[in-house]
Picture 1 (cartoon, chains in turn blue, purple):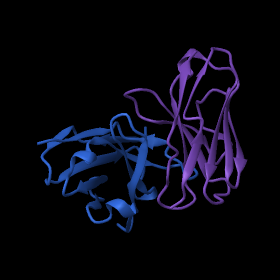
Picture 2 (cartoon, rainbow over the protein chains, first blue to last red; picture 1 turned 120 degrees about the vertical axis):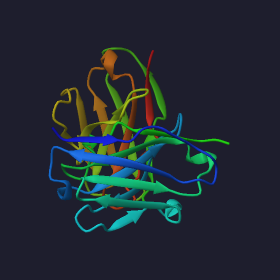
Picture 3 (cartoon, rainbow over the protein chains, first blue to last red; picture 1 turned 180 degrees about the vertical axis):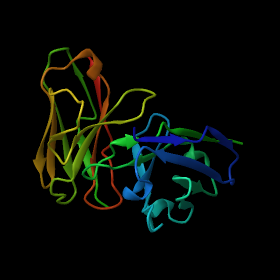
Picture 4 (tube, rainbow over the protein chains, first blue to last red; picture 1 turned 180 degrees about the horizontal axis):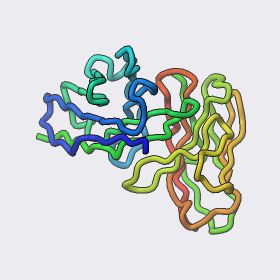
Length: 118
Length: 107
């Protein structure tokens, strides 16, 4: 079945970087764009960025543009989200999600908790 | 960026009630509007896509309507398992913005 499996929880200090992975299985990896969404504790959902797994082209939310990098490895069907210069406000659950149907997130990873604390 | 505004932010309802949540886009998004349900500590779950299409496996008591800038999610008869937070999302253009959420609580 179609599945996205993310890497485990991370604890980082302010100013550090974090890299979260999302491994896809059950479908042709390059067929569907991959998105990243995050959710701070008790808050709503925030779209972060998107990657075309076939070409590697990306688009990011403007407020994260300077600190966010999304990459992919087609040999392992894995997408990576790298967020730098972490601050306490980046503490959140980070999700990868893909759209196998009409422009909607029908498949989600299980989420990765990133805690930024000194 | 397209802003998505949901109302109400929260509501209290009883089992069996008909519940309606609205979502307004800051510009026309045609029918590129999705609805998700999220329970505490869980991954969001797609309910409705393309404004009115029911995702596979989602109970038929959920329905969506609207186009352009105004959209509605309706739960025809609220069930105990429906108490959750609901988000709308536009997928017309990046960034695919979400509404702030509507928390449905037990009255």
